[in-house]
Length: 196
Image (cartoon, rainbow, N blue to C red):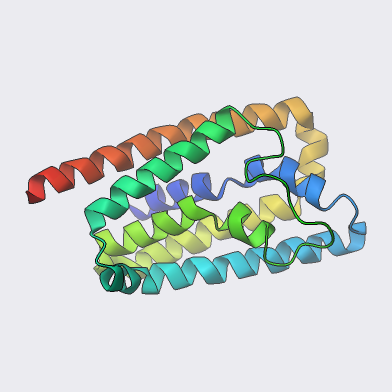
């Protein structure tokens, strides 16, 4: 996988456009002056979690005796389920009802930005090609920068795209993410069958 492909995959998994409606609802009662600071802070927390999983995830997998094939298949399934929820949204949002008050780590940093699919994706990259950790870090950093820029400009983008435009973008990203999920699943199954 090239750095550009990894960056685009990470950007799809972080799903900044799909998170805009949820963020606008979560931060509705927060003073406008604090919203950008909160979004930046939560993005930094999410990046920290993603980097921990990128660099230490394979050791965690080793301790739990989980093969990279199993991680690939599980990552594909999780991505597929999240893509389904992006295409066919549920009442209460993608992750269900949220806590009241100003968000801190949950639910913005985790699971909106650094969700299960993002964590599984970075672990899968690091496990499949551990010699390219610097390339994966660069791809993650690039995707994070773009995602953070989009999230901080959420209110402006929400006004420009309007609710229908946001829904259309989220569904389009869901379709693209679904194809990535199927490819991850097929790669995991292929690797498993080759290892038998």
